[in-house]
Image 1 (cartoon, one colour):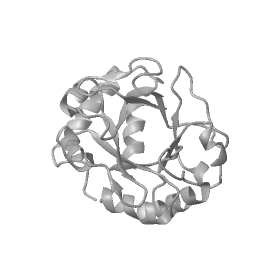
Image 2 (cartoon, helix red, strand yellow):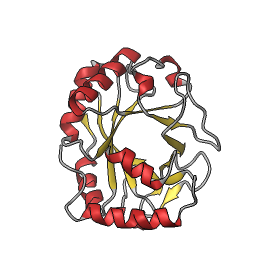
Image 3 (cartoon, helix red, strand yellow):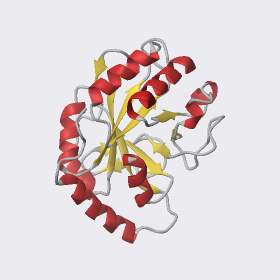
Image 4 (tube, helix red, strand yellow):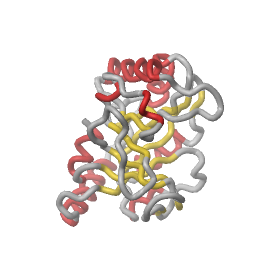
Length: 229
């Protein structure tokens, strides 16, 4: 992996973060994160940052071999704007440890990259199992010392409420006005409240268009600490 922040980009982000903290309402949910993949064909991170986006979680890998073709180029573009960078792996019904190795090899240096495992139905093959997800999480933790976010909706995650997986911070998918926790998790960290079509506004971002938007359960300062911890 390579660091997601260029030498001068991170100070720029902190300056922007201090401004956002100064103007934020105490106790509010922070709505500054989007998640993307190659399906978003036109992305301008400069415009997105001007529209208030401070963090991006981008699809990196799927299964044992697939790499999102836009991942590397967009990571570099986000670095140039001082945007926090995250990477997610779409889990499938294959060996969990091997999937984690593929993910980590693709991402590189994880010290400033937020990591996530996408757990949902795989419409193109076998879906990931709880055991495979656990093996993925355990390998990521062994290599990086950090637990990845677990992404999914309450219905699909009901079978994934294992002691290992529920220790991971939850990235909840619930396109609506209120989040609904899956069995086993006591709170959520990120909430994907819209896919750009379904769910409340704002559901679009300048420089991207309609897209997945996410709220962080805390302050902007807490978001920064969580992202790079």
